[in-house]
Length: 206
Image (cartoon, rainbow, N blue to C red; front, side, top):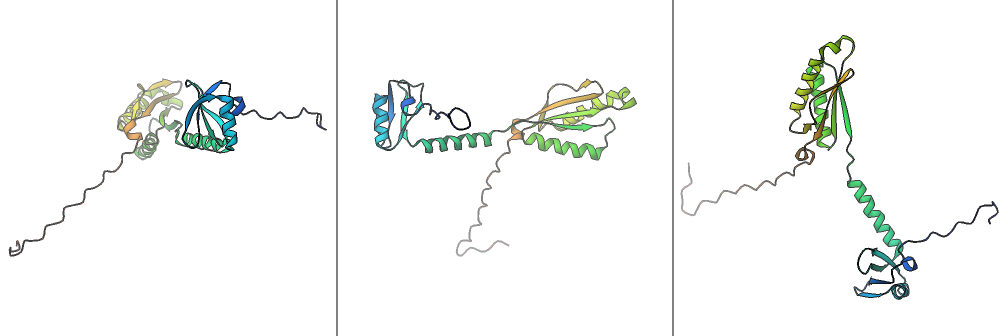
């Protein structure tokens, strides 16, 4: 027990490394490129003689595959791969845009452009028409606005069904079109053919 009365911390066990490997034999891969099926204990000893660790990299293979390498370097490469995968992973969000039944054209176009950008980024867009007071008696105006919105965004997003009325709000949800979400690469312009110089003795064209 340490002075504070807590149990001493146990050393962290490295799973699938050296003596923690449970398989009786492995297909061992060494830095010189040699591959050999051998008892795990012998493979661990050989790796340690090289100043390396034996790390299980394919536990489901028959026999399991283990590689002699530096454990710290292996951890670093794994974390780097996970970071790259996480960076490339795109989290799809639902971007909400709110309208009123009598939204003017300027405000409509402003929000439509926002929606196009959201869809191009691979996100979903939820367009909501809010009815206040007596506006609830004119839900048809909100429905027409949402249908117009869906049609204007057809090249960029697909409406998931018709507009729905829930309480005092009507909404429609659009998912991005794959072709729109992935920016196309600009085609390389072919250089124009240079005019051929006139042949010797030929008269230039007027």
